[in-house]
Image (spheres, rainbow, N blue to C red):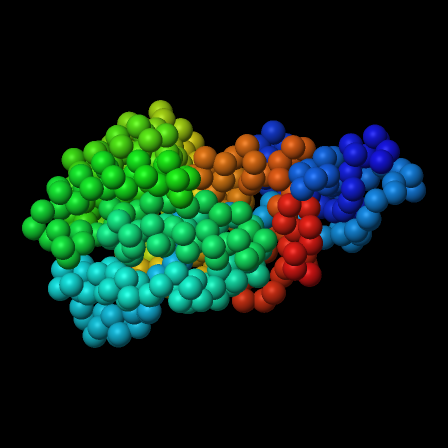
Length: 412
Ligand code: DI6
Ligand code: FE
């Protein structure tokens, strides 16, 4: 293979490349009329068309016809493995019950826990499959999946194993997160400290040794776990060498974000009630603020996350689907781009950053994915658009021309 092409086996030519690389000082890191070459699943070459004598190239040539290439989308926060569905609870809410009331009455997360415990790995995977397929079909190339609907040692492991088995059937990168501290299990309702001890002393060390999870997450909230309990989980995760994430400041301000930042968390997620002290701490630790507009929308929240302050402190903002049966049964990351703009006031560029580079940072994976630059994984999407802002602007039409995973065209 000709070395002028960086050893590329395959080259996309005549492309508008929205690299999302901050070192490229144009909106979206845009490189107009460029070519991108791929070798062994990674990006081997990015060069202006005018510098390329494509006649000498012996590999496969794909003409992008001046369409836009972006990094593959990264959905950095989902709970997509669960049993059953909660439309009855949706109806109850529309008759006036609140999410917290339903949760306190034993519905909510715990009803999904019962449905999830009742299923084996194969049945769970079958129920989750259409949700994963929906994300993949719109251009997601990396997905994070949390446990959290098992709440026993065995059921939490079952969810993580199911995630791995399911993802192995698809061209997708998977990151898994242990969210055993999602709700207090019914067996420990009067002794949540003892459950946290089980999570910290047994579950976290085991998932770390067995490579079942990349990170650990906690729901730090009045209806779930206290800041003191959350801190024990962060410390155990740190000791086990796992990434740290937290559901914080979703329904009230428990200062979970500040606490997690103190443990160099990869991300703190939700954040409607986040305050300036939390933002300062996140800035210091380089923690990503993951915004979840699907949950805000679906629960009819009115308090918005402090986007302007996050901007001022230059805290990176990720956008994710939070795909789950109770607060965001919405299997579309592109919809989140639209909601991030319309509901939270993000710019279309911030929205796309949130679902690419900043999503990658929220998974501790920015060296591998989330931007298009030489050496990164060749996970990309070719879109039929005239401006990258269209990805956030329009929803419901199929804009995807090619989905490319590790250099291979997986959908066209
Ligand atoms: N916050 C959420 O919005 C989801 N989990 C969490 O910690 C909701 C999960 C559910 O209602 O099933
Ligand atoms: Fe969540």
